[in-house]
Length: 570
Image 1: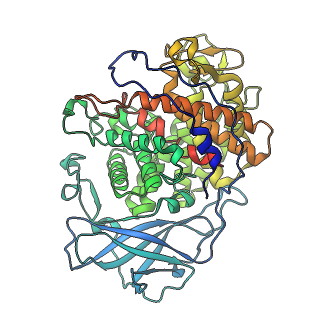
Image 2: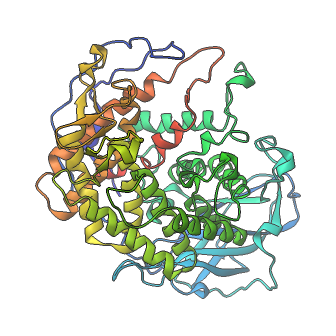
């Protein structure tokens, strides 16, 4: 991947910052009127979603010893290593070397192959491998090793080898020891292994992503993602009282839209240990709250939109923790039990959000072990999404009554922001299917936003004039509001903008004529996204600097929008 000057030029246009003060209720008026939307940017040449296979190479792995590792003593450690598709198929062709190039005795197991729900997406190569080795840390400092592929291992670590979790330590022995209650006994690797963000992006661990800092014009996006991430994990200034912290170990709400996966996204983009640590702990704690029916118990009711297998699968692929397989399967079964793969206008309830998480639950369960039932279900859910969108709006039309519970309102509409969740799930489906119908659906959602969903915030608040946002629900020539026109709708500019950027990318892959205008909408929404993130970035003695109210917005802002910059660039 390389830098594109087009995006830097587009974003060099000055963008207005949000105001500094404010509290609950409708925010006070921000500062100057936003700068009008610029002309469409030139469309850069395409980039391949799957990087071309490299038969032989190496990746740096950074080992971080924890407090329980004694300096000068050898420690047995294990870590998961995701690979891009097609790089290596034989675990015997994976070896480890130290900083001087000497081979370290190791053992390698396959955690998962690249699986296929289509004719071209999977080739049997290794999706994730589990690497065991012994290492002696001279002191408490991190050390860098290299994992090579395409070269036979000549030094093998003798077995039998324990389960990776047997090599873990209590979080009470590490940084942020009170991140989760001691009674929950959350554990983590005694030695963490981090990977370069460029590698994590190429491996499509969370879909396509660029490393943070690669595009200076998007430095504000990178800073906001990590700043709001700090608030999400209560990494706050000393003067912020406990009452302003996020109670994620007590309340279900911060977990909506997959908190653990959003934290993994920060690791993917930065490669930083702290984000891997927070994400792993979140996944482990979340998994401990999944009941026999695949439901998140902290919610206190059967609510499928709180059931996520993807973050648990990611943690399994990065740590080798086989205990996560059981909750992933249970979540997949919950999807089958609670969400049908058919639609009728007589149904009482249907939303894009539930469709998205049912699809992602099936995809995680399929990726785990190739379950053919879950694979067939993923195909069925994706096909249903496509069928429901064969209309002039190009979105999965359903009734307002089904979506909102408004009796008698049978107008057909879609939700742009819930559509963003579904677009993210359909992209995940495309990665394992390369189904052209899925790609066309992703592309069509950009036309839906451009032609039916977009409005100017100035129609309600003149201080928002020039900022584009989308209606809460909209169909062809009509819309439904939830009382949040302007201030509320702009909160979804980041996620809907990322969906629109993804759509522009898909249209370019398909050679469709509308890609330039959809790209322009994505750039317009990017301005509103920045305005929103700047608005909630404030300095007040008793509040977090990067304020999250409600806490779940961290997940909807940065979860599915992780690849915003990648799709804009390519």
